[in-house]
Length: 334
Image (cartoon, rainbow, N blue to C red):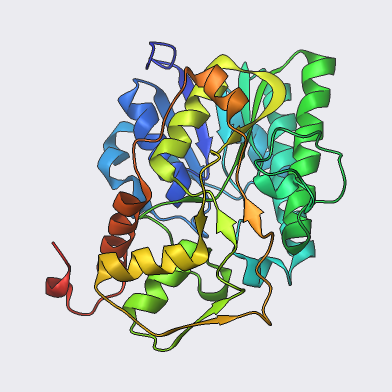
């Protein structure tokens, strides 16, 4: 499926040391691109790109500063903007202003800097959080202005909505080639643990392997999500950037989903830890079901199907735990 489109293409990846961005950097290097990574290392680490460190250029910078954005954008064919703050429900629902400001500042400055610098192609990484709570399931690519964003991630959702609008306007007014993607619940083994800020899979993996018993889980456990491994997510980002730069959003997700109860059971099975589980319905659980209508995605990507299933991905997350937290690494499962 891979073409020569990325070969020797001068590509800037912002947030390239993050758990998602680092997978993208590896895939771009493998595709032959000339890659520069910009990251402030607030949530990413240089260890995440260790496998390709000698094949890329790294710049440490804070992209909330517009002058910095203008400096780092100069001279690139393609910019893939993954920089931003994305946290789990527990933190995000209490910090809408913080999530709005930081994500919006980075996005607006980066896209304007790319325009001024003559960047030929730009990827806006939006989110499934732009969708309203009453969106149909599976969710197609709805108009970005429909209803209010998902209420538990409202500040983050508004930042991503405005990013999409900016992309549409710049495509229309300046003729910029811009791709927009809306990922659904990516996960991976390079996640940087951040306590209450962490997303559902790393949170559950850490708590279960820490030996928490009983394990209290927010919500009924019946809420369902489509989970997609970071490796598959970034492959799809590359295909969308290459093939669909028309400033129309594309879901990165599928219509098969897993309940949180099933997820807990799978983590327990893979890890060999079996705590008593209490589902706390007094706590928010977000939207009851969240999965994507993949029709447009499949059309653009030539029917791309995920390479990494959830069991394999959870196995990687268990290994991530032992690498990151276990005092005695010799106890890591094989």
